[in-house]
Length: 382
Image (tube, rainbow, N blue to C red):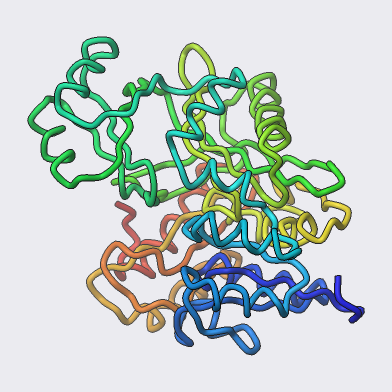
């Protein structure tokens, strides 16, 4: 830490995750800085003195980190070599390059987790249609092809039913792995936090509803999940964080199958599956991430109500989203609305809403209606 009494946390990236972390930093009395590509990015609009630069530039990253006590991230795309260079120069970086490698390289992540004994889909690197066909001969069709690097929000993932569709994906020249297509019952996620001192905290396991590779809805806690399975998922998240040396937040996306839990993806930052915590948990994931990277005692992850439901607001055909705020606020004064300051484009995440309460069906309906009206001007969720 520097000589000032107030620590400075710098977040590389200025999307909505950084924007919401800024609010938590203000409440904790932490100085918060972002490295943004432009002044109109989501977090740059609301943080003091944003650093405008390129996260892929060593000089920009070095200059940004020089004014921070701790550097952290709102995305996984900073080149690993640049993160390592910050660490070599004595900068405190959480999570560090050794951990972040497993969110930046899906092949490395699958190989490492499998080697540690975690259950993951069967996988192999592939470079040709023949490789994919050989893999399908063992796992069956369809085959899931994933870009080794750069994928997020459904991008870089293709479900191929036959060799011809695999050939189309391979034509892009990307480094790929093939994975077995898991027949899951539903998708779950667990968000945990881990501090440098080794303290851990796990939020309730949530159910996530995905469509077109994008998380549309999160239900906390996952309805109908047996207590033993919930405890297993929380334990799994904490053990993965420990085994990978994560400091900060870790989100583990899971498949629930008739044979148990399967690890799908990892994210070492605040995560869409944890947005509900802003209104539905005693400690939001954004505050928890700051506590963790600053090695402060972690906050309680307990729910504030029986259920919390978060629904993402996706941009629709009408860009005048703010004109519909009055209706939503008047119709349900208890629903919480979070907008990201982003230009509205079709399918783009521009905000989210959260509702809490005792009756899951009612809570879910409220959140869906609010999100649908904000996106499209109709209270019909689709």
